[in-house]
Length: 243
Image 1 (cartoon, one colour):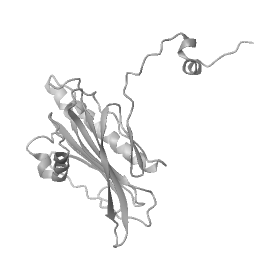
Image 2: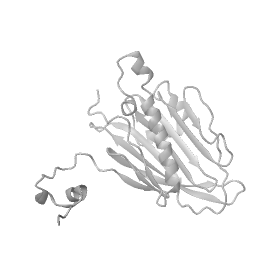
Image 3: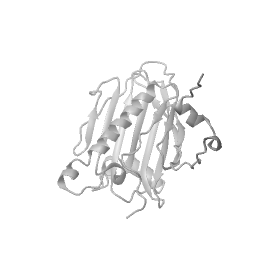
Image 4: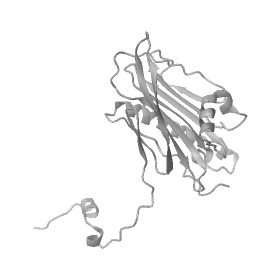
């Protein structure tokens, strides 16, 4: 009788000395993982840095007297020369034990030169709003539209020196779940290099797909027991040097 061992189990269960195959060291940096509220934030491979967590109590509607405890955690991605390539802030409710139904503002207005996807159609009881500004580093756009983020960045001496995009996503349910993400990302992480007009016209598609994947990851995290929230990898790898 011939004993048949499944191929993949054999390859992955035996030590390197037995298989006579050299064990190469891992070349991909391990994923970073941080708690934030009721969620488990998992970041794609890269030189991420924890920028700390803060707590806040959000008043519930309708009626006074009840609040939802929230937590925000911020992380930043550095490049090969230590430069900032991306900043991400994630906010979620600290627990899933909400005393009653919650009325969230589904306010998700359209805005000039900003890609806006209001999947909740301005619902009064839930929010599902994805916003993306491709050229957020021009004409003081961030200062005019998100001064709180500018103050936050200045307080931590964080500056993205290359052109960058702004993104935000807000997802909230009547049951009280909330996931809010906002941040900045270097264009080189989101847009390919272009050499002609046709390539330039389609250069924004990878970033749009990434934003949609980010929103989907946030939605899925609400249904996870541990709040597993996996940030999708950027479409393009971090540059090896700053030009």
